[in-house]
Length: 93
Image (cartoon, rainbow, N blue to C red; front, side):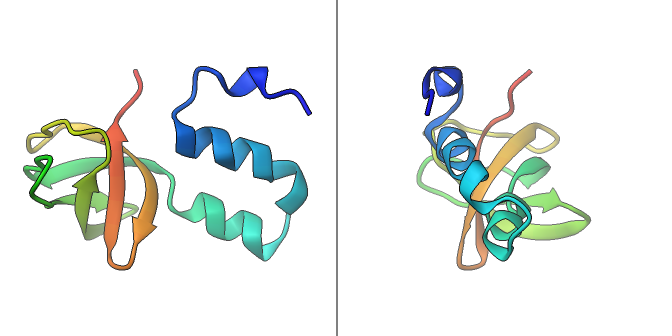
């Protein structure tokens, strides 16, 4: 398996790409990718404070994984979920 294709991705995205061949068209595959995509910040997110985002038409609490501050209106990349809180990082341009 070639891991070089994952060098430009964040660790979560690289992990999903590695697992993809083993889980395609299965419940595992759908579950892994259900919590990925772009969200819009509704309430500021800081490294030590969760905020709120709108993701797939629903409002969620969100926590930043990479220590950045996100202000309302900014797009963020959803990379996972921890209970009822989405895990976000800076959106890639």
